[in-house]
Amino acid sequence: MMCLLLTGSLAAPGIAAAANGDDFAVREEQALRAYSSAINQSQRHGRYRQARALFLTQSGNISSRVEAWEKASQQWVLGWYKVMALADLQKNISYAQFEAELQQLLRDQHDGLLRLSNDAKVVKAAADGALELLGPANTAAVPPELSQYASVVQALTQRENELRTAITQTSQIPTSRMARHETVAQTSRQVILARVRVALLKTGRYPLEQTLSSVQALLAAEQVVDPVIAALTQAENDMNRFALNLQVFHVEESLTQSRTLCASSQAKLAPLTTPAAYVAQAKARATQLCSAIEAHASGLLSYGIPKADLVYEYITVEKASLTSLCKTSQAPVACEKLAVLASLTLPDLKAMTDKKLRFVEFGWSEQFKAAKSN
Image 1: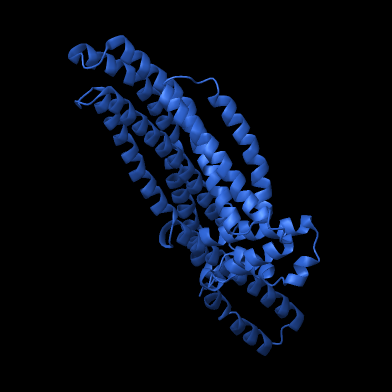
Image 2 (image 1 turned 180 degrees about the horizontal axis):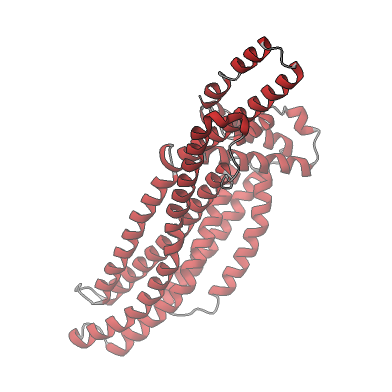
């Protein structure tokens, strides 16, 4: 619209000048400069609208992500109230049940904090993309060729600056609060033992010294176990997804990383001995997850299917959704790159080296993710 507004009235001065006998070459150069300036401003306006959509209107926009993060953050804080209520021994339950509930609540809090951290990173990445689309603040003067539209150009600059500020401030909310959440998590764990001690002195529900020793051991073990199990669970989920999608190079790379993770995880869990049942369960779960990772990878790699065929099938399945994903009039740049990769035929892929096939597979994965996020 801005381009039509600006360019639609550029021809009239040229016609008038022609009638007065002006030099054609000069007029042509002036018209080209004016047209180029108008196109540049139109492109600026288009990028502004895309960035604004990323921030406010499109599905999964930055504002809604931050709002969802804040709600999840509030629920996570409330989760610590549940932990403290349990530590106060408000429930008349056996110690075994108390310990089981405490384990579950602490695991929920650990996983919740991990999700908040990951979601904060997603928000920051989306904001960085929107800010990159906007580009740096425009400090250039209005081009002389567009002096009669100075107010329009200046208004666009103002809107860009306002949007840039809004994106920056809003996207910083999750990141700025994560450090405080980490402190809350650490402090809350330290408070649990003290509250259990006070409750035991009041109620005498469980043997004092034995209970305090068991709770302390659980808190120490949980600090090791929960991060290990969370990392292994994520690795197993990723490997399962890669194998199902026939992402052979992702599987190979992930398998190497997962084997290193499994070895380090076993080393971290090995020194733990108490609480015996909790530690045994954690070690068994770690072994199970590592075995599942190997099974997922073997299930794809053992077929002996050529890598070119697997890459082709992976892209073929996903490119079916390209039409709906990239149907907008302002489709992201990623869609253009995806279109190039989607045009590759099976013979094209069979002619490639493994290095090039890996580039195609990872390139498709990254661009498809970028297109979905936009």
